[in-house]
Amino acid sequence: MALRKKSGKDEVKVATAAAETAVVEKTHAQAPTLTKFAAALSDVENALEPVEFGTLPIVKANLGELHLEDEPLGKEIVVSIVSFNDRFAVSPNDNDAPNNLCKFSFDGEVCTDGTLVRDHLETLREEGWNKAAVKKYLDVIAILGNAEEETEEIGNIVVLSLSPQSVKAFTRYRLGVSVRIGNGELDPDQAKRVIVQAKNKTFGTNKFTCMAFKLAD
Image 1 (cartoon, rainbow, N blue to C red):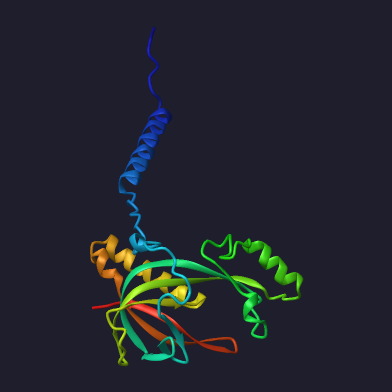
Image 2 (cartoon, rainbow, N blue to C red; image 1 turned 60 degrees about the vertical axis):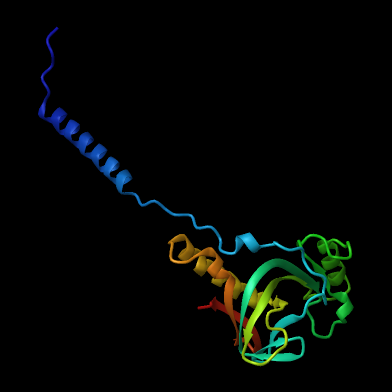
């Protein structure tokens, strides 16, 4: 049987198909490989069991400074992080509410007294606390390495009590050092030595102090 001679149109179709195949192959070959970075400090997340309130001295940010209980530490301290864990507060979210209406949970599901978080939240709203809410805090257990003000707690274990705004700052710190660790610029253990600073913030008409974090030298 005689073979049909390719027409000019056939040759154009073949050439076009070959060109498209080459483009696809080149595109696949040049596609960048995305690197997935491990979250920094993951090895110390929940490394220790949550500590009962009052077991360790607490560091908080207030009035433009960091305070260890009632002792001022200045605007900046250096710590080495040992462990950290979530803490959720289920409260009326109202300054006029009694303190005993606030309950805490370490998993966001069950309060420390056995009450379900959702049940306590519902109860508060039924009692007329319309602003009742669940807010995420963070307890960071760390060794206090240095402080602007003199303190006898240098070298001892403390708990940094992070407000929701401070939690966001801590998350930003983790993201930043995660990229540096993933790029080989930083050893994972270096990320545990942190400078903690007191920063004044304004949200609407509210002024408050929260914590900021950066890598220590």
